Length: 215
Image (cartoon, rainbow, N blue to C red; front, side):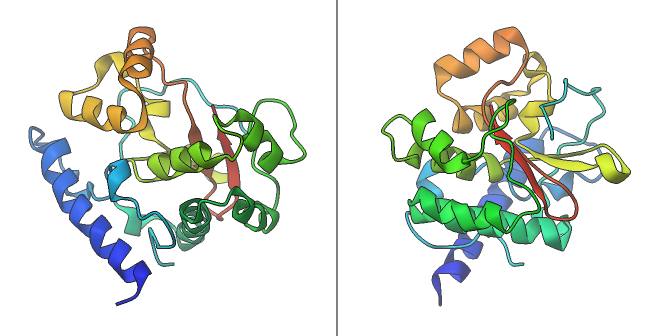
């Protein structure tokens, strides 16, 4: 069995666990969609692997009716393919492997509110050790969380994690656990007090264009 198949099996197991954890207390319809819930850091392979077959500044928190999605297989195929490429590059541990991903994109993803010509150089500078590996880890943690679908038509976009479009002051206990998989306890508590997520978020259009990965 190849490495990608092993990762798919691992994610399938996470899916089943997340289904019970996140929505055990909910009677709302369609909750069985929870499948791609936040994988803990220790469950992501150190190298190679797969999370699927296959500008924008962050918006203000939406209404409380925004639906959190976990069914990765329900994503449009172009979105799956882009997530696959991002995951493969991130799992390699070499941030330069991310370059061909966004160079194959229609445009360079936004990495901050100002224009950046070289996202790789920006991520290296922003990283803790200058290699960008913590940024790659953040990408993996973000794309293995729940997500939301927002906007319509040309404005439609899929956003990870769903916390970017959620009032953090109103999280359920299970959602708080998911939040701690992305943030340190200190950062999570600060954002919960503010009621707004301000860490990395990633957006991809339905056509598979990687729009942004930014804080």
